[in-house]
Image 1 (cartoon, rainbow, N blue to C red):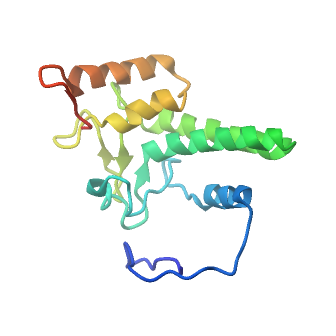
Image 2: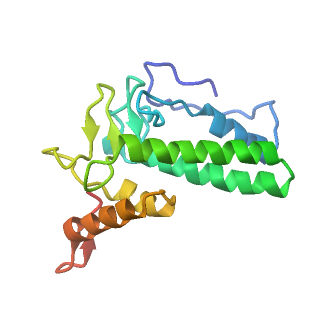
Amino acid sequence: AEELSPEEDERYFIPSVSEQTASLMEHCRRAIRRVSFGEHGLPHMGSCDWNDGMSGIGREGRGESVWLAQFLAIVEERMAALCLRRGETDEARQLLDSARQHKEAVDREAWDGEWYLRAYTDSGEAVGSRRSEEGGLDLLPQAFAALSGMPNKKRIAQALDACLDRLVDREHGVIRLF
């Protein structure tokens, strides 16, 4: 399909089979190269976050996602492992360096003192901040801090402790996402 225009968030249509072909490896490479980054060095999130409640945050193209930076680091590290198995050491090294840079950007730009932010809006406002009246602690970037192997282990522990303290409702057996 054609790319969405800046005015479109989504499009309903009947897809057709493309005449382009490529290997799965090339498809993965293209997906990684497609990511663009904002002023905080975090990936742009656009208007189609997995959480529909977040979809308006990057509609103008400047919003940035902390979780996406962590997820991208995981993808790049796993892709690097595949490259190494294929003998593509230069590409593997580039992917590992990129993953490290994304984690550093998260630690530098998204640590809020007690946990990781969730995002930055198009206007640059932090989402998921301890200073926010709404949308404070978000489980997603805290969990992905551990899953992605963020370098600062003390921060990971502190962020997960904040989740245990604030998001776990032991009485009702519920863990809230926010």
